[in-house]
Length: 312
Image 1 (cartoon, rainbow, N blue to C red):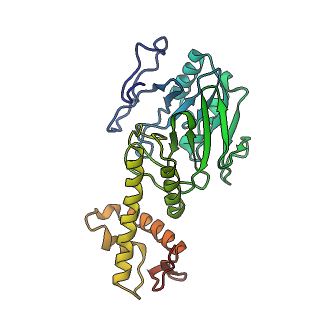
Image 2 (cartoon, helix red, strand yellow):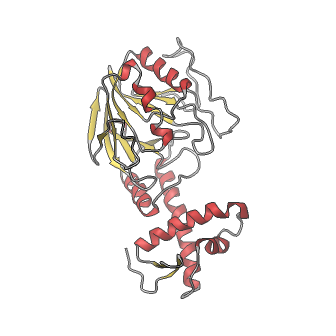
Image 3 (cartoon, one colour):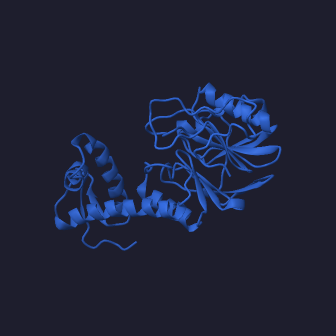
């Protein structure tokens, strides 16, 4: 198994030139090579789209050991460097794609799909994802189902629907290695954003319940301490939720908007970051509302503690 920060220059891929780290002024803690053979059944191809939200870039994965393999995610649109790297790997391995899995609808995961589908090696493949109304109608998706399993030579993947980051988000469990391809549920660095915190917390717990040995994230480095990382994500969110509830409980009967709660809770945060913090607080409040722990005045969109909160 190649260390995650190593570039393979004298191994399997040494007869085509794809081994250059992503060239960007955006600095990450670890440099991720453009192509890495992670194991006999996993090759990671970096999406060459670094940035504040994508870290070193989108990690896409070629999975399997035989002639027909699976590609997980496709990076951004119009990134010829990524397509060249992907094409080079597929040609060198002398393989075709049987399936393309899209973890969710965000552009840095689905954007490169049309470019990938133009490759000769993807001529006879199926494209799979969970449905969402924002899906490009011009692309024919087969719809994933929770618990569905796919097999190619050397790899069996089980689908887990993990909404929260987005409604259509899925992670994939590699049965042979007890590994999780986590998409944007868990990142190699920092924490993830989400649409629905209530669903996101349930999805984190669902992944933790699989007791994975390793996590391959959609962005950032391989996670070799998955249980600790997942527990950190859950604890971090629970601590923030407790802070919000403590403020509301301390002012029973008083209503707050998100920004007022930010000023009470994020005391060490620069005011320039208050809008982002308010958005975060709003997600927590929506979760608490679903759980019956707070109420919201529809007319003013102001929040207060609910005296007889239901226990969920």
